[in-house]
Image 1 (cartoon, rainbow, N blue to C red):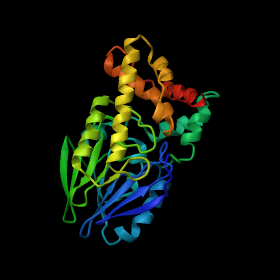
Image 2 (image 1 turned 90 degrees about the horizontal axis):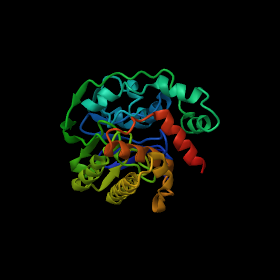
Image 3 (image 1 turned 180 degrees about the vertical axis):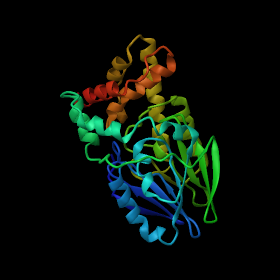
Length: 311
């Protein structure tokens, strides 16, 4: 993972990114878009402590232009579990994101890091999620939902919220600020880290990368990792196409999803963070190729990732 610093980064033209190194599990990014007297917040963070730190860092800006709108790019907790701290804001998400928000709860995450799942899975989960505090989190439903696209006005400037899921999750969205040539991508982009296909289909995710490229943005704020440009988008697209090709070949050869994940040589992608996510990505592709493939077992996939990470 490329190195970058924690905190608020000025992007120019009233835009800021809030970055959390090293961009791995749960360490996500957010954004702030300022207009005349009002701001829009793109995503909150994984727990209340992290979200408070972010809001405190933004306070010199938001005291002059309060957060009137919060957009959640998708339903993963590291992008919405701090929502309760943004009081008074209209919370906007795609309908698919709103429906997905209740499926994985803070209580479930608390269980994952407290229960003993054995000598391989337990340390894997605690190392990745044990630094977060899932107590006291309430996830209120969005106050406004949409399908496809919604155009917002924030203090006199236009913001485009574009649904591109299902891909990483069921309802992924982009937040595009045309006058600043900037896009906040949520988890459509992991820069320096391995994308993880929880939902798919992969072709939708590839199409989402093409949609970002077509926006011709100069500044791209990923869901995880450092700031990027079109080269970061192209790299994620190449990875997804690579995994699709490699997994499809092994499916035709009769390999199981786990056998295929273990057999794929990652090459240039081996140094990307959390490369063991290949397990989830291959399993999702198998489900896409074969409707009879068993549905995802999340704990089982985490165990397979833990085993892969130890290799």
